[in-house]
Structures are given as C-alpha cells and as structure tokens.
Length: 150
Image (cartoon, rainbow, N blue to C red; front, top):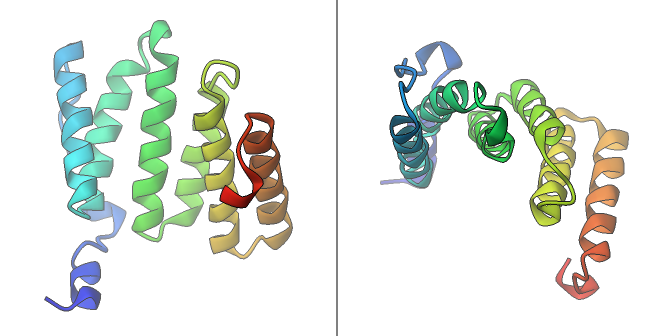
C-alpha cells in the first residue's frame, strides 16, 4: 500500500473517534492503556486516543496516579498531533506538564517540553516553539545529555 494512502486512512476527524467505555477498575484502565499503545503502533491514532482518554478518566480519579495521568495526557497529545489536531494536542501536552513531577522523571518532563515546542512549531508559533525547544535542550543538558546527541 502506498504510504500516502495509508496515512490518509487514519486521518479521522475527532467526531469519528470511537467511544470507549470508562474502565471500572485498575486492571481495565491498564488494559485500555495497553490497547492504546497497540493502536498507536499501528498508526490508528483515533483508537489510540480513545483508549488513552478512557484510561485517563479512571486514573485521574486517583490522587496517587499523577505520573500515569501525565503519561496518558502526553500520549493523547501525540495521537492528536498525528491526527493534525495541533490545538488540542497542545492542550494535552500542557496538561501533562502540569501533572508531571520534574524531579521524579526529568527526562519525561524534558520530552513533554520538547513536544510542546514541536506543537507550537506546527501551529506556526515560532517564538513559542523556539522558547520551548531551548528549554527542553537545557533540561536535557542539565541531566548530563551529550550535546552532540541533541
């Protein structure tokens, strides 16, 4: 199959994103998360987004699951970005950053900051993109990353 045709196959508008039942327990929430990962790997971004959104609804009720809700928000941002819904992707990334504990997972924090920069770039917000990319670069360097690898 032609790669352009394959990419168009999954460019569903958000009103075509399937509804997924909200998980009733942690096991179901984790299953929804894993299904989202499989759908994302298969480039089926609407289904990935739907499953991560369902898992996020369950985990967001648990105060001890902030890292998981942050990861899910970031994943939803990735899915939305791949569906070219950059405005909503930006909101997801920004919310993920709010839930993220920079000291607990500095690499993930820097990655989300970088994703915000990339999303601003897609939206044409060059100044904001540059600021976030510079901040992500500095965060990676502060963790001991090799400059040549960045």
